[in-house]
Image 1 (tube, one colour):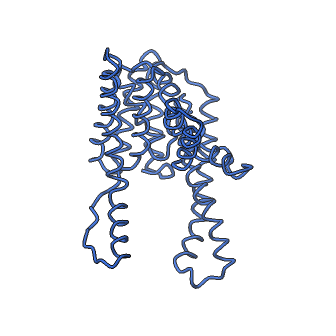
Image 2 (spheres, rainbow, N blue to C red):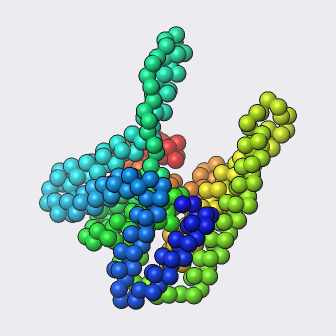
Image 3 (cartoon, rainbow, N blue to C red):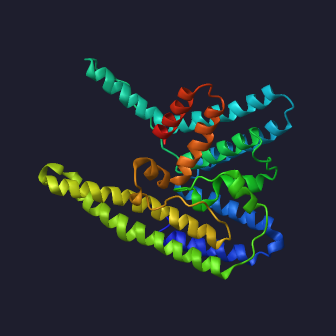
Length: 322
């Protein structure tokens, strides 16, 4: 169910009307509606993966509670690393097992062997990176005392899988999003109008710019040998704008949809092509991802660094990963 589909439009209008029909004092029921809607939205891709989403959510929810209740630092660390290992293990299995199998096969072929190692029939669950990073950030914030544990499982589950941000982010942090999910929101006409404007802008970038660029790019790169050098260069530039317009278009629609529910998500793109250098470009492109890595990898590693070299090493490692 893509944001630019008629099916999603019907779904969104129904959820929007039901949400605001519920009185503000019953905001917990609103959250339950959004959570049920998010699971329905996710199930439209493959309902089997709802169980994986539920497992990941429950794991980090219980890990957060266990970390807060533990009196010993060692016990807190056990729960922290249990969450990290399981989350990263699941993410790595679905995203990288076949990549490593194919790379290993290529390596063996390059040295004269004929490997017969088959790739696994793995279907990548949509949005797995986003909800995994949501859960990990929450557990890390609880462990380091940056955020008080959320004991209401409905609120926490909604933080993990709020449907506007499941497809293309942004990757939210608990201190920014969860407090917005623990109170009622007053209907605000101006926020609804602003949200609609942002949705339309995102729709324009996705359908008008990205999709039209894609038709040209696909035509050229289906048979690059039949095209001249300037045409290939032009198609390469179009591909960059296609990726940007596609990704940022979805992000804009996600922000607009959330805005119409009274919820503010973080900005994910900030005119990256106007950046003065590569470092600034990275900081303006997929802002929530680079922020996540810098906060949870660079800063946490630097806290344990014992030399200037270690700090520089952590900086470049983080930016390379991003």
